[in-house]
Picture 1 (cartoon, rainbow, N blue to C red):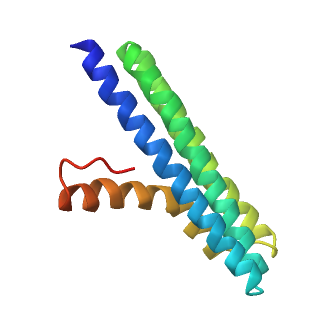
Picture 2 (tube, rainbow, N blue to C red):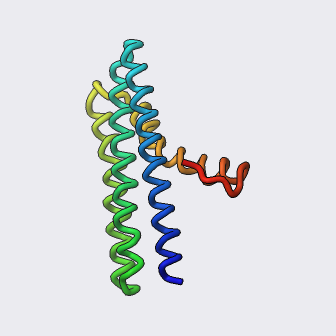
Length: 136
């Protein structure tokens, strides 16, 4: 029973990794198109936000299995530390964008939302429209 649960969790992690890569790749292509259109600050902002969005989900993927193996008190501290680190990962590019004119802050915010939006669209919409089909 434990092996089946671990297999399902690994399959979910792999799906999220693939979705993260595809979302990041899509945002890099959009950033290159923006760069070609002469929107250098928007392109850089989108790429910066996308990078930190992927980094955020990489931290989540590393911490969740750890949290499942710890006792309640340690698990609570790990959850708090995880939230603090992830908030820093999300705040850092926004602070950079607000301090430096070379990054467009709206594009950074859009980049930060790229990976969560891709996962939401897959889990919340696509899998409901096409149940039972593997989405990669």
